[in-house]
Length: 372
Image (tube, rainbow, N blue to C red; front, side):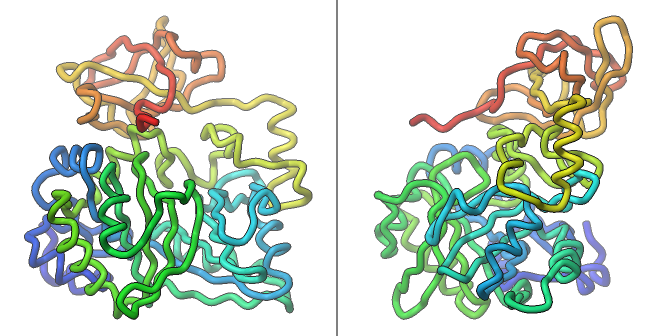
């Protein structure tokens, strides 16, 4: 448990009191006092896979960029190619260092011709904002840090479309990674068909003073769909089943997008961007490690973050980046860094679990994919 004097030093989202009322188990996460679970991680995980869940993601950061130079500016600091999308669409991308490492992974929402929104990780807000400012041109781009005044609520799961329809938002004809504005009962919000669970759903962005209304409205309307609040614990197992990267685990400033299995985010042809020269060189000379998936049966134990991975002859060749029990699959799953010649599905390696070397095989990623 967190001591009361420590809690007072933590940041709190606009929905903090709602979580307390719901009896959430609260923890410190990225400097915030956040719910890790309400009724239990496994139960909440299964609710999102089979019904619909609500997440308070208001600890995430929101930074707006406007002006005639906004597009070129964002192109110069991210490795994906913004020209591949247009207003009304979103793009997953990375902020890369000159040495090819990752400062953060983020989603850019192209709102209007000269207006963009970047949603960034809570644990990287200070680093990202500093990086944005350091590389901001003298003119043509206006940056607005809205992190402390914005709330973000995610609605995720098979029944999310029906719940949202009842609420007043129709996403039935919206493909993934679309963003649009809607006004419901006089409250205007951004609606994005994005998420971090591998399920159908949206992320809703509103000012802090609308957060409680939005949360309670969705909870009330969602009763017929068995909606439930979901904590950070299930959010992590959901993203791991979908093999989505988590900063500080699969991504950091010493790991390139190629190593993390995010080759598809690197568009070398888009022109110059920070880190491009290094990434060209790494691609030409050979990528030293790659991300792979492994599984163990439930009795063998969970391969935990940082656990060592060995070749069959006992040589240390990598480590676990994320590991957890998969409620959907009924087994333990993990993402690991391995040499490129060891990532092919079916390759046998050994992983350290509870001080024992367990023989496992690499598997195809993702571990779970939503039925079409």
